[in-house]
Image (cartoon, rainbow, N blue to C red; front, side):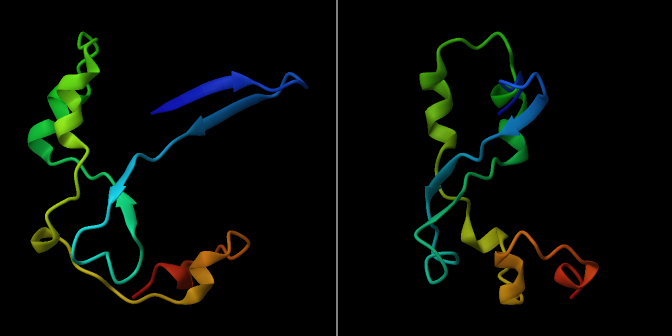
Length: 91
């Protein structure tokens, strides 16, 4: 979900949102919420612009299968947006 809008000063601003859900078993020790991760089988329905009854999409807003995920420890430096270097993503 994203949008481009004009600020009061007339500047074009691109913004987005992340839909969250309760954490699965893998993420729970880290945080109580996690981003919704759609399985590839849901892409067509989620992106279908003809769907106007959003209730049919609610079933996708659930924790992703923890068996299909892997947790990797990272530096606490990733918590600060001022830190922007390749070392943050290198394993």
